[in-house]
Image (cartoon, rainbow, N blue to C red; front, side):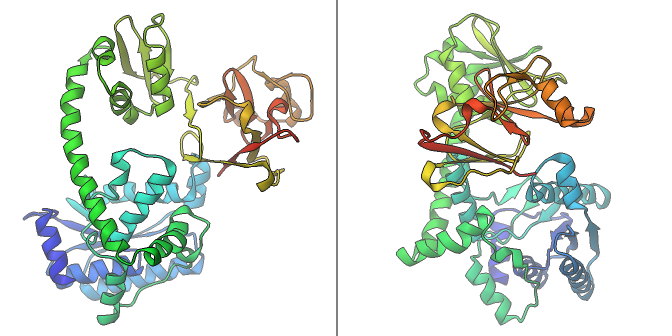
Length: 440
């Protein structure tokens, strides 16, 4: 492992002379093995440990363990405690997303304050395989099948060559102590379901599954790099930067064989989903002026171009929900499932909407409510103004401002977190249920 980590760092040029290294250490087996191997390989570094305060006294135990280990190596140790639950509630994201955001933001702060030019995290080969399947299940392109990048900005992954089995063997042979996070054994998260249920099954079906998958991901990475280089030249021929933003020549785009994929490659990074891009192409020859919104950008159809620009502050943002099983994190964390009617029990939890799948038209949209909006509250056969509905609920002004709507076309399907529309309820005639869970 010591020779391998040195060879991997040199072969991928992860560190150069003069780099100042910060190593993220949680106390778990992966990060402890990484820190041990880096130390034995002769690399100097400081340690950063995040205490997300999610596991009670165990979180404090992790912090103490990492601090003492760092001191035993003679390393500078940075410790930080976060109120992760409060941050997740404030930002309306999952706890996992909150922890990731807090973690990397703090690493960047440390890099600026102490001059760290590289930040090492303990992602390993099995993590890359898990990420492959997570992205595959959620829907992805070639880029999502490349696992985890060996380098991303200042962040490097010097352990990405090693499998979980190799890491366990190294820890045993060097008697490396580590902390066990019991949540890693739970299967309520998708990554853990893949780790504990899916990958062992595939390993039994094909004993060489692990090395084959690592080779697959390596080849996909190479193919993706080639694809990106060729794509960059093609995008240059279709776009032009102007004072208004980026103009996409629709006449040239119309002549392309893979126009749908090309337009998505241009706009996907700005928050426009594949169904929205498809809609743009469908109506590309229509009247100018049609506008599409993502969280931070606007696309306006001009006579001979699509104009991409940065949005000014507005409450008119539209977010698009694709069909099929999916998970989105902006503007809310929503998990979407489609299942047969007989397989589901209708929930009374206001954070869960059970909707007749055949009644809605994709892509669904998510937007803020506005004055004049009406819907049919569940159990009622006539419409009501949302403002009157909110008054009955005695919502405060801040609560009203934070209300989001799920819409099908112009219809409100769900006042998220409050009530679904009666017209979209599950009935005895329902064949498939669209179940959407808001993870606060």
